[in-house]
Length: 297
Image (cartoon, rainbow, N blue to C red; front, side, top):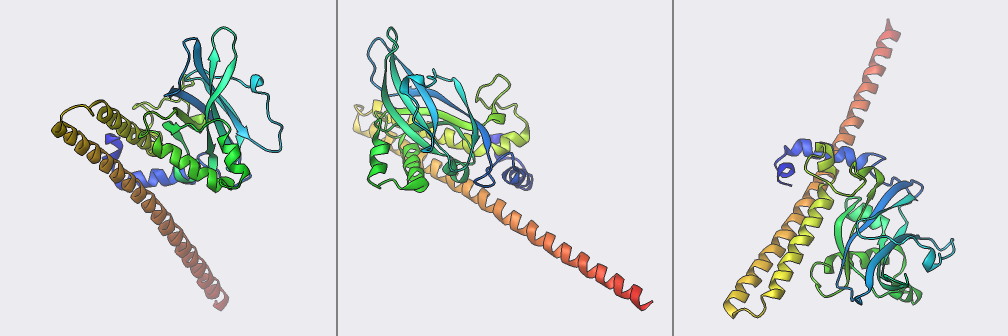
Protein backbone atom coordinates (compact mmCIF):
# COMPACT_ATOMS: atom_id res chain seq x y z
CA UNK A 1 0.00 0.00 0.00
CA UNK A 2 2.83 2.43 0.83
CA UNK A 3 4.38 2.01 -2.58
CA UNK A 4 1.11 2.75 -4.32
CA UNK A 5 0.18 5.63 -2.03
CA UNK A 6 3.45 7.38 -2.89
CA UNK A 7 3.01 6.90 -6.63
CA UNK A 8 2.60 10.02 -8.74
CA UNK A 9 -1.09 10.93 -8.44
CA UNK A 10 -1.59 11.72 -12.12
CA UNK A 11 -0.17 8.35 -13.18
CA UNK A 12 -2.28 6.63 -10.56
CA UNK A 13 -5.51 8.21 -11.76
CA UNK A 14 -4.70 7.53 -15.40
CA UNK A 15 -4.05 3.85 -14.78
CA UNK A 16 -7.07 3.48 -12.50
CA UNK A 17 -9.25 5.09 -15.16
CA UNK A 18 -7.99 2.67 -17.80
CA UNK A 19 -8.91 -0.28 -15.60
CA UNK A 20 -12.27 1.16 -14.63
CA UNK A 21 -13.23 1.65 -18.26
CA UNK A 22 -12.05 -1.68 -19.65
CA UNK A 23 -14.50 -4.40 -20.65
CA UNK A 24 -12.49 -7.13 -18.99
CA UNK A 25 -12.50 -5.34 -15.66
CA UNK A 26 -16.22 -4.66 -15.28
CA UNK A 27 -19.78 -5.62 -16.12
CA UNK A 28 -20.78 -3.17 -18.85
CA UNK A 29 -24.44 -4.15 -18.92
CA UNK A 30 -26.86 -6.76 -17.73
CA UNK A 31 -26.00 -8.80 -20.83
CA UNK A 32 -22.26 -8.85 -20.14
CA UNK A 33 -21.02 -12.12 -18.66
CA UNK A 34 -17.82 -12.63 -16.67
CA UNK A 35 -16.11 -15.79 -15.42
CA UNK A 36 -15.33 -15.47 -11.72
CA UNK A 37 -13.80 -17.50 -8.91
CA UNK A 38 -14.88 -17.67 -5.28
CA UNK A 39 -13.15 -19.06 -2.22
CA UNK A 40 -13.88 -19.34 1.49
CA UNK A 41 -10.54 -18.97 3.27
CA UNK A 42 -11.64 -19.37 6.88
CA UNK A 43 -14.70 -19.66 9.12
CA UNK A 44 -14.86 -18.55 12.76
CA UNK A 45 -17.24 -18.75 15.72
CA UNK A 46 -19.22 -21.71 14.40
CA UNK A 47 -19.75 -24.36 17.13
CA UNK A 48 -18.62 -27.85 16.16
CA UNK A 49 -18.62 -31.26 17.78
CA UNK A 50 -15.31 -33.09 18.17
CA UNK A 51 -15.98 -35.17 15.04
CA UNK A 52 -17.04 -32.36 12.69
CA UNK A 53 -15.17 -30.25 10.16
CA UNK A 54 -16.25 -27.12 8.32
CA UNK A 55 -16.97 -27.17 4.59
CA UNK A 56 -18.75 -24.71 2.32
CA UNK A 57 -20.27 -24.21 -1.09
CA UNK A 58 -21.04 -21.31 -3.43
CA UNK A 59 -23.98 -21.30 -5.78
CA UNK A 60 -25.58 -18.72 -8.04
CA UNK A 61 -29.20 -18.10 -7.08
CA UNK A 62 -31.56 -18.36 -10.03
CA UNK A 63 -35.27 -18.89 -9.54
CA UNK A 64 -35.65 -20.17 -13.08
CA UNK A 65 -33.58 -23.22 -12.26
CA UNK A 66 -34.57 -25.97 -9.80
CA UNK A 67 -32.86 -26.05 -6.41
CA UNK A 68 -30.00 -28.53 -6.29
CA UNK A 69 -30.21 -31.33 -3.78
CA UNK A 70 -28.07 -30.50 -0.74
CA UNK A 71 -26.00 -33.67 -1.09
CA UNK A 72 -25.33 -33.02 -4.79
CA UNK A 73 -23.48 -29.78 -4.19
CA UNK A 74 -19.70 -29.54 -4.41
CA UNK A 75 -18.47 -29.09 -0.86
CA UNK A 76 -15.26 -27.10 -0.52
CA UNK A 77 -12.57 -27.18 2.12
CA UNK A 78 -10.77 -24.04 3.29
CA UNK A 79 -8.96 -22.09 0.52
CA UNK A 80 -10.41 -24.30 -2.24
CA UNK A 81 -11.56 -22.20 -5.20
CA UNK A 82 -14.65 -22.76 -7.32
CA UNK A 83 -15.29 -21.41 -10.81
CA UNK A 84 -18.50 -19.44 -11.38
CA UNK A 85 -19.09 -19.30 -15.12
CA UNK A 86 -20.80 -16.52 -17.08
CA UNK A 87 -21.95 -14.35 -14.20
CA UNK A 88 -24.15 -11.36 -14.99
CA UNK A 89 -24.23 -8.17 -12.95
CA UNK A 90 -27.61 -8.97 -11.40
CA UNK A 91 -26.49 -12.41 -10.20
CA UNK A 92 -26.53 -13.18 -6.48
CA UNK A 93 -23.99 -15.69 -5.17
CA UNK A 94 -24.79 -17.49 -1.94
CA UNK A 95 -22.14 -18.92 0.36
CA UNK A 96 -23.35 -21.62 2.73
CA UNK A 97 -21.19 -23.07 5.50
CA UNK A 98 -21.77 -26.62 6.74
CA UNK A 99 -20.50 -28.85 9.52
CA UNK A 100 -19.66 -32.30 8.15
CA UNK A 101 -19.26 -35.46 10.19
CA UNK A 102 -15.83 -36.99 9.54
CA UNK A 103 -17.16 -40.56 9.60
CA UNK A 104 -20.66 -40.54 8.10
CA UNK A 105 -20.24 -37.51 5.85
CA UNK A 106 -23.56 -36.13 7.10
CA UNK A 107 -23.80 -32.35 6.93
CA UNK A 108 -25.80 -29.66 8.65
CA UNK A 109 -26.11 -26.01 7.62
CA UNK A 110 -24.40 -23.54 9.96
CA UNK A 111 -24.81 -20.20 8.22
CA UNK A 112 -25.09 -18.38 4.91
CA UNK A 113 -24.55 -15.03 3.25
CA UNK A 114 -25.76 -13.66 -0.08
CA UNK A 115 -23.34 -11.69 -2.25
CA UNK A 116 -24.95 -9.44 -4.91
CA UNK A 117 -22.62 -8.94 -7.87
CA UNK A 118 -24.01 -5.48 -8.61
CA UNK A 119 -23.01 -4.32 -5.12
CA UNK A 120 -19.52 -5.82 -5.48
CA UNK A 121 -19.04 -4.02 -8.81
CA UNK A 122 -20.47 -0.62 -7.88
CA UNK A 123 -19.43 -0.29 -4.22
CA UNK A 124 -16.46 -2.58 -3.67
CA UNK A 125 -14.19 -2.01 -6.71
CA UNK A 126 -15.33 -5.16 -8.53
CA UNK A 127 -13.63 -7.64 -6.18
CA UNK A 128 -13.68 -9.01 -2.65
CA UNK A 129 -10.24 -9.91 -1.32
CA UNK A 130 -9.89 -11.81 1.98
CA UNK A 131 -13.02 -10.03 3.21
CA UNK A 132 -14.87 -10.98 6.40
CA UNK A 133 -18.69 -11.26 6.35
CA UNK A 134 -21.06 -12.35 9.08
CA UNK A 135 -23.19 -15.44 8.46
CA UNK A 136 -26.97 -15.43 8.81
CA UNK A 137 -28.98 -18.30 10.25
CA UNK A 138 -29.66 -20.87 7.48
CA UNK A 139 -32.92 -20.09 5.73
CA UNK A 140 -33.26 -16.62 7.27
CA UNK A 141 -32.78 -14.82 3.95
CA UNK A 142 -35.58 -16.80 2.29
CA UNK A 143 -37.90 -16.15 5.24
CA UNK A 144 -37.18 -12.41 5.26
CA UNK A 145 -37.59 -12.16 1.48
CA UNK A 146 -40.90 -14.04 1.60
CA UNK A 147 -42.49 -11.30 3.71
CA UNK A 148 -41.06 -8.47 1.60
CA UNK A 149 -38.46 -7.15 4.06
CA UNK A 150 -35.53 -7.70 1.70
CA UNK A 151 -36.84 -6.53 -1.64
CA UNK A 152 -34.73 -7.21 -4.71
CA UNK A 153 -31.05 -6.54 -5.35
CA UNK A 154 -31.05 -3.34 -3.30
CA UNK A 155 -32.24 -5.15 -0.18
CA UNK A 156 -29.67 -7.90 -0.65
CA UNK A 157 -26.99 -5.25 -1.20
CA UNK A 158 -27.85 -3.46 2.05
CA UNK A 159 -27.82 -6.75 3.95
CA UNK A 160 -24.42 -7.60 2.50
CA UNK A 161 -23.03 -4.17 3.46
CA UNK A 162 -24.14 -4.80 7.06
CA UNK A 163 -22.52 -8.25 6.98
CA UNK A 164 -19.20 -6.68 5.93
CA UNK A 165 -19.41 -3.86 8.45
CA UNK A 166 -20.29 -6.09 11.41
CA UNK A 167 -17.90 -8.96 10.72
CA UNK A 168 -14.71 -7.48 12.24
CA UNK A 169 -16.59 -6.01 15.21
CA UNK A 170 -18.89 -8.88 16.27
CA UNK A 171 -16.28 -11.38 17.42
CA UNK A 172 -18.70 -14.03 18.66
CA UNK A 173 -20.96 -14.04 15.60
CA UNK A 174 -20.33 -16.74 12.95
CA UNK A 175 -18.32 -15.26 10.10
CA UNK A 176 -16.39 -16.26 6.99
CA UNK A 177 -13.37 -14.79 5.21
CA UNK A 178 -14.03 -14.89 1.45
CA UNK A 179 -12.67 -13.73 -1.88
CA UNK A 180 -14.59 -13.18 -5.11
CA UNK A 181 -12.88 -11.91 -8.24
CA UNK A 182 -12.44 -12.41 -11.97
CA UNK A 183 -10.86 -15.69 -12.99
CA UNK A 184 -8.02 -13.73 -14.56
CA UNK A 185 -7.07 -12.35 -11.13
CA UNK A 186 -5.83 -15.70 -9.82
CA UNK A 187 -2.11 -15.98 -9.16
CA UNK A 188 -0.06 -18.48 -11.25
CA UNK A 189 -0.63 -21.21 -8.64
CA UNK A 190 -4.41 -20.83 -8.97
CA UNK A 191 -4.94 -19.10 -5.61
CA UNK A 192 -6.42 -15.73 -4.70
CA UNK A 193 -3.24 -14.28 -3.24
CA UNK A 194 -1.97 -10.89 -4.47
CA UNK A 195 1.69 -10.38 -3.66
CA UNK A 196 3.91 -7.29 -3.80
CA UNK A 197 5.61 -8.48 -7.00
CA UNK A 198 2.42 -7.95 -9.04
CA UNK A 199 2.74 -5.65 -12.07
CA UNK A 200 2.20 -2.02 -11.12
CA UNK A 201 -1.08 -1.73 -13.04
CA UNK A 202 -2.48 -4.77 -11.18
CA UNK A 203 -1.45 -3.37 -7.80
CA UNK A 204 -3.28 -0.15 -8.63
CA UNK A 205 -6.43 -1.82 -9.92
CA UNK A 206 -6.64 -4.08 -6.86
CA UNK A 207 -5.73 -1.42 -4.32
CA UNK A 208 -9.33 -0.81 -3.18
CA UNK A 209 -10.16 -4.45 -2.27
CA UNK A 210 -6.75 -4.89 -0.59
CA UNK A 211 -7.19 -1.70 1.43
CA UNK A 212 -10.66 -2.79 2.52
CA UNK A 213 -9.29 -6.14 3.69
CA UNK A 214 -6.52 -4.38 5.61
CA UNK A 215 -9.04 -2.08 7.29
CA UNK A 216 -11.18 -5.02 8.37
CA UNK A 217 -8.23 -6.89 9.86
CA UNK A 218 -7.05 -3.80 11.75
CA UNK A 219 -10.48 -3.38 13.32
CA UNK A 220 -10.76 -7.11 14.09
CA UNK A 221 -7.33 -7.23 15.75
CA UNK A 222 -8.15 -4.14 17.81
CA UNK A 223 -11.50 -5.61 18.86
CA UNK A 224 -9.87 -8.91 19.85
CA UNK A 225 -7.19 -7.12 21.85
CA UNK A 226 -9.78 -4.96 23.57
CA UNK A 227 -11.90 -8.01 24.40
CA UNK A 228 -8.94 -9.89 25.87
CA UNK A 229 -7.86 -6.94 27.99
CA UNK A 230 -11.24 -6.09 29.51
CA UNK A 231 -10.14 -7.39 32.92
CA UNK A 232 -7.12 -5.12 33.09
CA UNK A 233 -7.13 -2.02 35.38
CA UNK A 234 -9.37 0.88 34.34
CA UNK A 235 -6.51 3.14 33.23
CA UNK A 236 -5.11 0.53 30.86
CA UNK A 237 -8.59 -0.24 29.56
CA UNK A 238 -9.06 3.44 28.78
CA UNK A 239 -5.80 3.40 26.84
CA UNK A 240 -7.03 0.41 24.85
CA UNK A 241 -10.30 2.21 24.10
CA UNK A 242 -8.36 5.23 22.88
CA UNK A 243 -6.28 2.99 20.61
CA UNK A 244 -9.41 1.37 19.21
CA UNK A 245 -10.97 4.77 18.52
CA UNK A 246 -7.78 5.86 16.79
CA UNK A 247 -7.84 2.75 14.59
CA UNK A 248 -11.49 3.30 13.72
CA UNK A 249 -10.75 6.93 12.83
CA UNK A 250 -7.88 5.76 10.64
CA UNK A 251 -10.23 3.35 8.87
CA UNK A 252 -12.74 6.15 8.28
CA UNK A 253 -10.02 8.42 6.89
CA UNK A 254 -8.83 5.74 4.49
CA UNK A 255 -12.39 5.25 3.25
CA UNK A 256 -12.65 9.00 2.62
CA UNK A 257 -9.35 8.97 0.71
CA UNK A 258 -10.65 6.16 -1.50
CA UNK A 259 -13.83 8.13 -2.22
CA UNK A 260 -11.73 11.18 -3.14
CA UNK A 261 -9.72 9.07 -5.59
CA UNK A 262 -12.92 7.79 -7.16
CA UNK A 263 -14.20 11.35 -7.51
CA UNK A 264 -10.93 12.38 -9.15
CA UNK A 265 -11.25 9.53 -11.63
CA UNK A 266 -14.78 10.63 -12.55
CA UNK A 267 -13.62 14.24 -12.94
CA UNK A 268 -10.69 13.17 -15.15
CA UNK A 269 -13.06 11.16 -17.34
CA UNK A 270 -15.37 14.17 -17.73
CA UNK A 271 -12.44 16.43 -18.63
CA UNK A 272 -11.14 14.01 -21.23
CA UNK A 273 -14.60 13.60 -22.76
CA UNK A 274 -14.99 17.40 -22.94
CA UNK A 275 -11.54 17.76 -24.52
CA UNK A 276 -12.37 15.12 -27.11
CA UNK A 277 -15.58 16.94 -28.00
CA UNK A 278 -13.74 20.25 -28.40
CA UNK A 279 -11.07 18.62 -30.54
CA UNK A 280 -13.71 17.01 -32.73
CA UNK A 281 -15.53 20.33 -33.13
CA UNK A 282 -12.29 22.13 -34.00
CA UNK A 283 -11.41 19.49 -36.56
CA UNK A 284 -14.85 19.76 -38.15
CA UNK A 285 -14.57 23.57 -38.34
CA UNK A 286 -11.14 23.31 -39.91
CA UNK A 287 -12.42 20.87 -42.52
CA UNK A 288 -15.34 23.15 -43.41
CA UNK A 289 -12.99 26.14 -43.77
CA UNK A 290 -10.73 24.24 -46.16
CA UNK A 291 -13.72 23.17 -48.26
CA UNK A 292 -14.97 26.75 -48.50
CA UNK A 293 -11.55 27.96 -49.62
CA UNK A 294 -11.41 25.33 -52.31
CA UNK A 295 -14.86 26.30 -53.55
CA UNK A 296 -13.83 29.98 -53.80
CA UNK A 297 -10.77 29.05 -55.85
